[in-house]
Length: 231
Ligand SMILES: [Co+2]
Image (cartoon, rainbow, N blue to C red; front, side):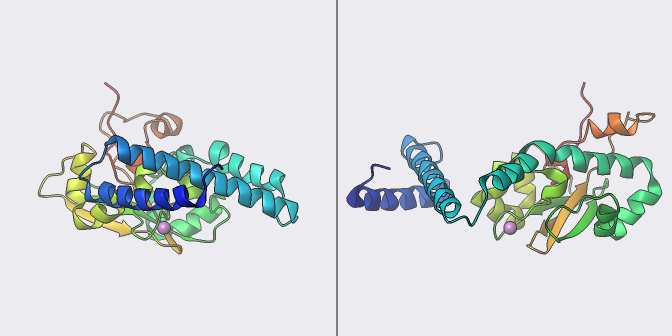
């Protein structure tokens, strides 16, 4: 990277101003903020490459193993796995009950625990309860079931507002909930990850597990949307 020390210090000052401006929501979308964010992104990516190269040269990591891990989370693990769990829970009452009682045990049975030995908790949406998942501290997420988290899940604004004003956040996502619906927010940790079992949409009677799974979206399993049948 061509940055000398002065311009680098200057950049750090600018990007922290940009970050606080973004947080305040005052200038989201301004060219300055975007320029600083892009700069920050490229700075992280350069630092990451440098770190990988140092660790590889010291033979502390193997690039082939790293590639395999990235490929695993990018291509093999994804929301299709959680979607299958949801579809199965819609069809099989006994499975659903066991899932809600002890999701970790069910995930272990189905070989869905992944590398992390985290606890998994399943919560169900009903006409009167809507569950929303967040990680206020960072971005803890049920990777083995949903793959990589969406960018908004890691966003400071989402993490802060989801616990303060979940209805407002859901409304921004296009989901307006009636006053008779209780909203429950689940704060994930390094130890506990949550999976939302969305409501099965009407008009799906007689569908197979595969057909049902194809309707289940990633965001519905975070509680950020309801599943709608395609028109
Ligand atoms: Co976290």
